[in-house]
Image (cartoon, rainbow, N blue to C red; front, side, top):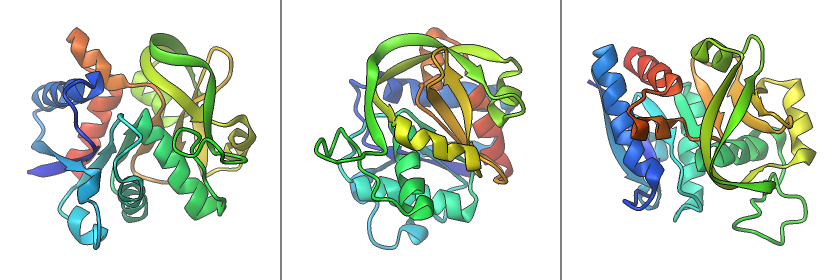
Length: 230
């Protein structure tokens, strides 16, 4: 049985946290995959992170930031990226996947405006317009993993966030290997993926919310498929 680590701080009042187990259960049943999942509260991710996460085949950094232990969330993402385990980050997971990459690969001091409002040039900045409990159209990058997963050039997905990738850092994604996978109708980055990896996808939107409407999100299905093969 393969296991997925759900990295975050589970709370019943968070819609995404209620949706994720439903979405995973739907995917496992449809795919008949031998996959289970376990919540890993960020405050438990300390010390030898590699030893803690080694038993898991995949990592999903879930919504609900700011996390109680930001360093733990970043360490889990770094472990998944460097060990080439399937990784999915949604909403806060998207933000922190970018923070981890900016710090470790771009070598920048990756501030997050939510937790450090005085950061002079944050990687994660306030959105021009709030995306709390709204749905929006996405345009997938042609040839991207997301375009393949959705089987369509566009899709509509739900959000619950106020922070995203700052415009100042978005241009860096053009050089790869971390690249834009989806933009919104105005051209803002809404998903990224890491080229050359088995599966490393992060989205500002929350595909798991489809499960609350009795629909299986293509991205969740693809993630479970990859986890089952790891």
